Length: 382
Image (cartoon, rainbow, N blue to C red; front, side, top):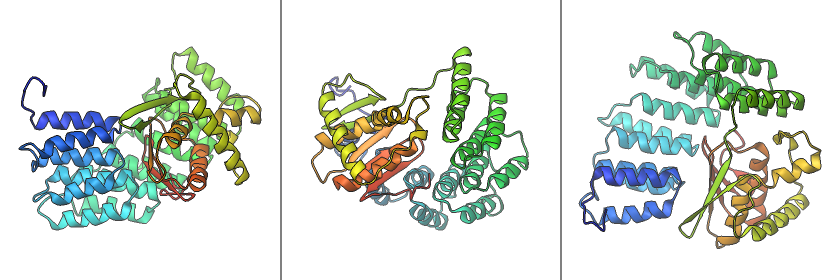
């Protein structure tokens, strides 16, 4: 388009930035940002909103904040973009601080604002704050709760272990609960290993969406965590019979402007020998540091030794190994994943960040995790 001398518009820049953010290609976001600065759209609110959203989704929340603060008159989308950005990074305090500033401005919060705030309260365990905000949303702001808001509260209560309260809350929803609501309860049942309520939640989801692959995967994870591998096998057979396939887990890392994608156990990368060598070294160092693999994360009915080997070829570990080889020391490694990371990968990433003295940033389907010096920004509450 540029070679043809066709002038770019707000839509052009917003669309390109959205595409870059979808693969977390921050180098490309930066290049587009440079073009915007040289254009007549360098102070355009719509384009700036796209930049805020893109930098946040690429893991650069501080850059997103800098752009937001340059806006003379941020609109509703501007406020929602930066608040949602902090929410996906798990920064509840920053999200709330911005919300308070927003309330003092002429811009009124909408339903999207509260979805972001309720989600970050749920992911950080701020139960009383979340419930208070939900009430305030209805009473003080006059916003009628949608199914997304109800889902946030179910997740808030369920993740805190208040499964019965979450179930009672679902019963009080004035309309028919959606599959999304029941799926949120199912996810909490997995965390707290409540198989009976988890099975009930899954049945509710499948009544509405009988082909929902996510529910089958969550059920498999729940049975695996409970040690019921026979149930896992039966469930997988049922999935095959009705033609449901589990989405392939993919992780990607950007090295020198090139995105490298990995799937579990993939062997097609040209630097695979180097990756395996790094994985072996990490395994040795982590074991000496006291790491013990959580084999419940593996759904295959094999012995523990084989399960441990399977864990080490999860897609995010392959991406991490390559990132460690190719990234200069002192620079953070940023990994994106299309599914939720397993508990064991989360645990080993903490260990590896301590061993390598390297900051590791992972964005899974739910949120960002910042690993540094043996800890994660989520506080293991995710």
